Image (cartoon, rainbow, N blue to C red; front, top):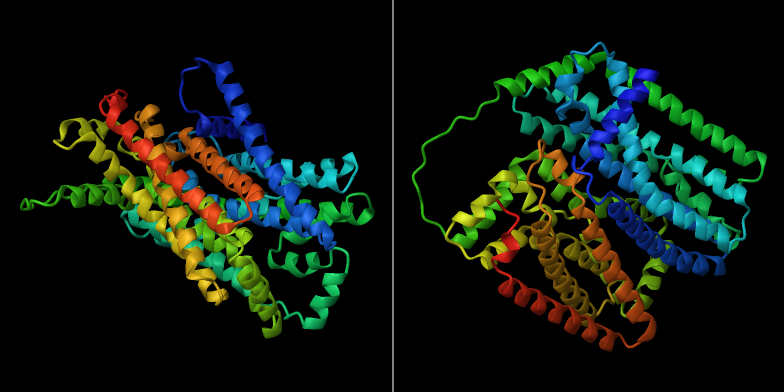
Amino acid sequence: MKETILLTKILFKSSITQSNKKKNSIGKVLFYLFIYLYIAGFVGYISYEIIRSLMLIKQEAIFLNICFIVVLCFCLIQSIITSLNVLYFSKDIEILLPLPITPKNIIMAKLNSLILSQYILIAVILLPALLIYSYLLKLSILFLFVGIIIMLLFPIVPITIVACLTTIVMKFTNVVKNKDIVQYLTTGITLILIIALQFFYTGTNNQITNQELAQKIVENNGLIEVYSKYFITLTPTINSLLNYNNIQGILNILILFCESIIVYYLVTIIISKFYIETTTSVLSSNSKNSKKIEDKVFVKENTLISYIKKEFKILVRNPIFFMQCVLPSILFPFILLLPMFMSLKNMGSEQIKIFQDILSQIINEPIGVLGAIIFTIFLFMFNFCSVTCISRDGQNSTFMKYIPVDYKKQLLYKILPGVILNIIPISYVIIIAKLFISTIHLKTIFYIVSVSILINILNNYLMVLVDLKNPKLNWITEYAVVKQNFNIFFEILLIIIEIGAIILLGTFISNIDLVAVILIVMFLLLNILINKYINKQNVNLFKKIY
């Protein structure tokens, strides 16, 4: 146990270390604290408004479901992206395997490191949400104590299950000797298995009738029983919080604890059976992996096209970059809305019609338009292409200074992959809205698309400037480009500020046409100002590229 704890400490510390420099450590701590308080304050405000609305229909416990579903989606996505690299492709494996450490201890330490990294996310989302929930419902301090226990237990099961599926799939895909193909295959198959398991589990649930749904609506927190079944780990979690002050709560905490410990140790045992064999095969295949360089005839190509192709090739050919910068923005919208699709699947035609009627009434109103814009730019948060576009090049970033292409054009070419990728969530929101709501106006679609595209361009320009100001060029492994890159927090902070500004504007102005015009003009002017700044600071922006 001591070996596992010590190894966990080492692995976790190395996974979050950004630099050996310790200058301005107090300033950094204060800055981190400010960012946390700002994000927590924003989460608290949103939580306050949602809980107050749900209290009117006596369904405030649904808020707990919303919070834990969001956290569960984050855990699943992050685990799918990181577990393969942490378990099999991290640089520390070559150091750990020769040491007198059992495979079980290595696996437990790596799983612990994955779980600990999720606690940072949980502290940002769940802690302020539970504080507001307990305040509005006037719950005792015991609720927060139970909440902290649940927060510590909740991510264990999803992370370990993903790690187990990844390992099993890796056992079979490892016959392919190409490292990149193995990573793509393993991640893709694991993702398909997780989605298939979710569909299978929800498919076994019986459809709820109209009478049962009506009864649940009038019951105090009755809908919680309807929706908590769609994720197996939610039932004991929600029940523990709802019954925090009685024996049922204690029993559900014990159930969640036993589930977590049993799954954790079973996964550890399963992985340890063939971990050494698989990792050894990975290391041996990597050592033999050499690319054959072929002679090609030079073909002159348009600068814009060739530069963008270069950027996409860097993203696609490197599995780590693809899984960390591209995959989350494609994957998260689907996983986030999976519970809604599962709910609709088990509803009757009358229930679906009622749901569509409610959406039809609000989609062309300010709350509907602004809600769609906010959801769209929230999905932009998972696109890390622009905020890492300089860092991804590493020491090769000096290439930008030697080619005969203007710096301003290079920055434009750098942001285009991120801009193009963000078209996916914009299209996703519009398609879903059009499918479910036939009464959506063309004017509403125009407002949503126009504002989203302007914010899309602005965010990508700002993020490439952030990466230029603080590039991470001296990385050892590709994994560090995103995982240990503090610039990511600036992207999250920017989007939270934008969401807050939109909510504030919608609070004071009820005319949707006026709100839309203000947003379009505001973000258009910001884009113009950014372009002027880039023109003025052209050469100075590249001072840290050397």
